[in-house]
Image (tube, rainbow, N blue to C red; front, side, top):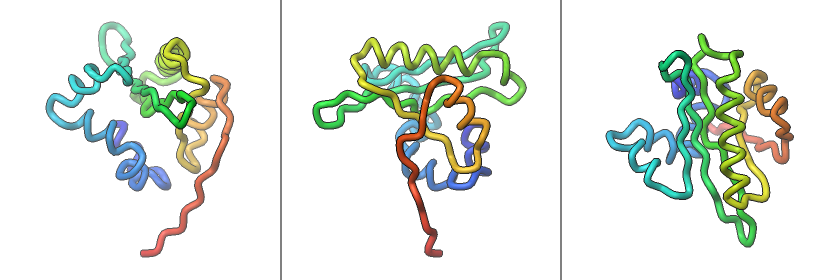
Amino acid sequence: MAVDDLQGVRGGSLYLRREAVVTVKALLRPGGIDRLLADRRRQVLVGTLDDAVVGLAVGRIDQVGDATIGIVDACYVEPEARELGVGRALLDSSVEWLQRSGCRGVDASALPGDRLTKGFFEAAGFKARMITMHQGLE
């Protein structure tokens, strides 16, 4: 569902092929979740309502020179379960883990025009630090 949602957003298909390729391929490949769970620099969380899985978050630790930065690769909640606090609980848990892991900051992505995702991250204290511009040449 998360992949399908991204396909319909401006920049989503390129994001899936470039930025999210490791996480998305790992999640969709047989045994991929097991490999993500075994990676000590990654954390995979699921969000539930009444014992049903309705969301997920994937975070990772990235070394950038002498700085350790946290990345939220995915934070997704099924549309029917949104606005119930599941996404915020997943994000907060991811950020807490990244902080305990020594990260100096946390990055997360929102695609252009996806105001719901942008607002979600802003409500959690995130601020834009870079905007990537793109020109298609097809």
